[in-house]
Length: 136
Image 1 (spheres, rainbow, N blue to C red):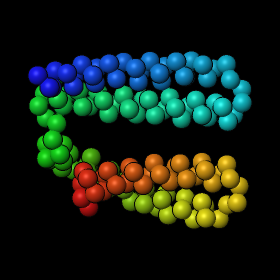
Image 2 (image 1 turned 30 degrees about the horizontal axis):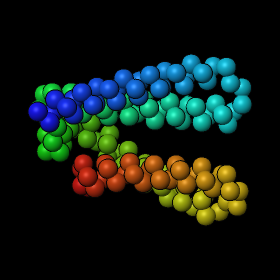
Image 3 (image 1 turned 180 degrees about the vertical axis):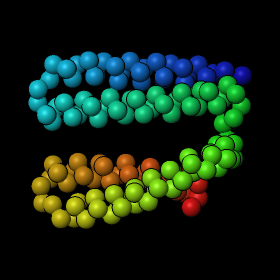
């Protein structure tokens, strides 16, 4: 069955993501350089985020609730959760505008690269929330 194969794959992915985040955070304790420490934290945070997404997919696949309609209707029943997401989308829009301005304004290549990375993440998050999940 395809679902069983996917569930196994996701379980393996979940273990790897959790191990990766844990190992990076452990290694960070011995690092003094602010840039390297930040890089480790960013990678660990990404693995933690990925683990949460994989966990959600696993639970949803096992319960049969993995669909856009089920996801949205469940959240829409929780007005407070829906309002929090709407507020987050508004804040994200402001962050995107601010970072775009900063990317254009700075001449420092490293700062520009890092800001562009943040901008790409924010735009991707914004698209997922605004266009694919809630369609505001």
